[in-house]
Amino acid sequence: MIPAIEISNLNKSIGKKDILKDISLTIYRGEIVGLIGHNGAGKSTLINILTGIKKPTQGSFVIYDNTGTMNKETQKVIGVMPDVDNLYQDMTVRFFLSYMSEIKGAKLSLQNIRELLEQVGLEAKLSNTRIKALSFGMKKKLCLAQALVGEPQLLILDEPTSGLDVHSVLHIKNLLLKLRGEGKTILLSSHNMEEVEKSCDRVAILKSGELTDIGTIEALIYKRQGVRKLIIRSSPVVTSDFLNQFALNIQIISQESNSIVIQVSDDEDISLLLKTLIEHSYKVYEVRSSDLQLKDIILGE
Ligand SMILES: Nc1ncnc2c1ncn2[C@@H]1O[C@H](COP(=O)(O)OP(=O)(O)OP(=O)(O)O)[C@@H](O)[C@H]1O
Image (tube, rainbow, N blue to C red):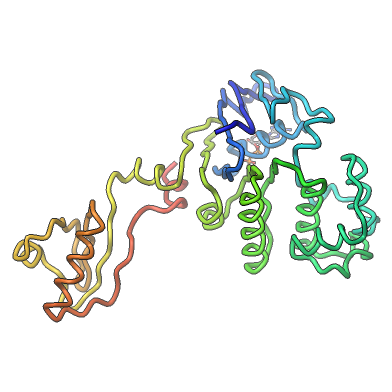
């Protein structure tokens, strides 16, 4: 695995306030990493440091073999979404994208602009519209289109889907997965835990400026929960006597009037349980995971 971003002992203080505390983190090429944490945890500050908007107080980082500050080489490698408020409101969409591509040393044809807009889910006919006439969601997609100018190897995206409708969120998620398939690296911050669960390979958790954990979602959940749990709703409800009678290697953790929560360590045990229930004319209405989700992890932080 080759690193795309290597952050070493990064600190950021403003006045007497420590905003980022000793962050060390490696993001590998070709992965999507989600940066999550409460409001004020330091996500935007970290992203702003990596994208050259803010300077760290201490520590260093390497992006695609370029150390520290944003130079021309790094700029070519990174695609960054600007803040919606920083868009040039009087420019047309087309002029804005051409202008931004020139800054990056890329040249966009009208066809390239149309393709970029379509990629982010904007209609190509919007290319002659002034930015101030776009809705918030459209502006947000334009910001993403700008990040994609020049086909950068690394995308650093601060809340790319906040404020977007469900279709657009899905569209952007699929776009990010497609880009990852092409070998791009993506670091994104988000409060949308479902989006993070569905698109990120690993998740980094920031809490009050500290990196408290990083790993795959499964690893983060397993670390906190330790075991796999399933809810089974059936008629009649399954009892421990039933499990003992058939020597099923399953432990009941809790029981409701119409369902049980079981702890399992092997998929085969689930299969055997369901088979036994059906053979004994049990009606199984629902089998679902009661595993923690990312939102539970954040709530527990
Ligand atoms: N210019 C500044 N001066 C003083 N404090 C600041 C400044 N910018 C950010 N902070 C503080 O730094 C901390 C981290 O802010 P940051 O915007 O990085 O958090 P975040 O995790 O992105 O939050 P959110 O999820 O709300 O966007 C907050 O406590 C914030 O008040």
